[in-house]
Amino acid sequence: MPESALPVTPVTFPPAFLWGAATSAYQIEGAVREDGRTPSIWDTFSHTPGRTAGGETGDIAVDHYHRYREDVALMAELGLSAYRFSISWSRVQPTGRGPAVQRGLDFYRRLVDELLAHGIKPAITLYHWDLPQELEDAGGWPERDTAYRFAEYAGIVGEALGDRVEQWITLNEPWCSAFLGYGSGVHAPGRTDAAAALRAAHHLNLAHGLGTSALRSVMPSRNTVAVSLNSCPVRPVSQDPADLAARQKIDDLANGVFHGPMLHGAYPETLFTATAAITDWSYVLDGDLATIDQPLDALGLNYYTPTLVSAASETAGSGSRSDGHGASAYSPWPGADDVTFHQTPGERTEMGWTIDPTGLHELIMRYSREAPGLPLYVTENGAAYDDKPDPEGRVHDPERTAYLHSHLSAVHRAITDGADVRGYYLWSLMDNFEWAYGYEKRFGAVYVDYATLARTPKSSAHWYSRAARTGALPPLED
Image (cartoon, rainbow, N blue to C red; front, top):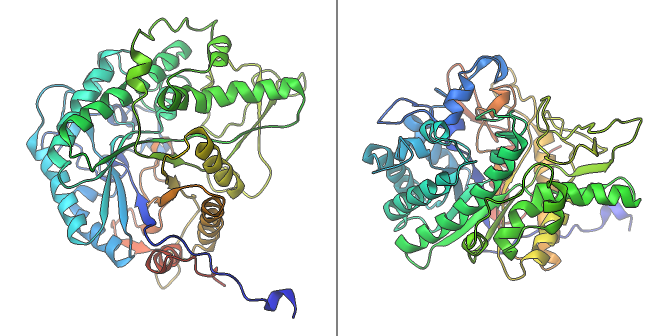
């Protein structure tokens, strides 16, 4: 029998595996001045000339604030079993301190009730980059007080929704908040201060620990608390000691700076050494690491592409980088000016990110070793393509379907290899405001016509729907 005629073993996932999609508040909600909401750092940043593509903002986004019932019905039609969304801090607590605005909380109460009515499990992310502007005016994440303000906010939301929402995530990708927001300045608030970026990283870690404790103090014990890290596989171009040292430096800054304190109660000593000329880390106070090192119920991993590095060479130039995090004269990698970033080989998405599902398998297996016994979720994974409707209004995106198939196959291989992966959240449910890229990058499984805000599931959404309903990966489209 020829190989092509051999029966194909179905790629089948465990029965309880969650098939979800993810979004974030500023990217989809709109209604930025309604029901007491005040500006976040992303409102300020996007309204600053030159900060976003075409000067675009999230003022309307895709108007999820008014269309959430339509969006939840669409999720149900697609057969999703889970939906991960974030809370707008400044919608709930406009100044970042003090009592909640109940009108803001009521929106999330209605959203949660709608999800539950359709049999969809809500997963709440408390912080997806949209710090209330008043807290940034007071110093933002480089200031220790912001961590305490976050804990207060976490307690408010946990008390309001903890009776109906079991899955909680404290922070989404704190690396981006710290190093893109305060280091390279390509994300809000747009500051370019390496020392401030490292202080921000520590205070985000502290916020996670304090927020975890605050949630557990007000919620039923059945609820789970996690964090979503955009950890990435960091690979050296060779086994030369200088390249291995470059790999260690970036791994500390990309991964260890967060998972070290959160999972092991300590920062990597090599991180301290590499950044000694920038900061003395004196803001890490006695007791901080114990506060950060709260036992987690799960760990969320966000994955898009691996990172390839070497020591800087005379030909490449010190600090030469193509690290995929936006154009800036300032580096998001404090203390790593002697590292060169290389474009990994292979096909790329519209973001310029190399498609490499082996990196997702590598990442999952790493954290299975880093935190044995801790359930894992892929809380973001997806791709941007230049999607356009055909004359009949259908949106055919076979590239995204192939991307999802290959990455879900990598997840399945990790499960087969012993990893405890409980779910997958596709990024993103629908096209939306892609931060500094404005609306030019489409990550959605659902196409949004930005002129009419009509939603149209792409062919990848129908493929993913079949996977969600059957628990097995359908064959690729022709």
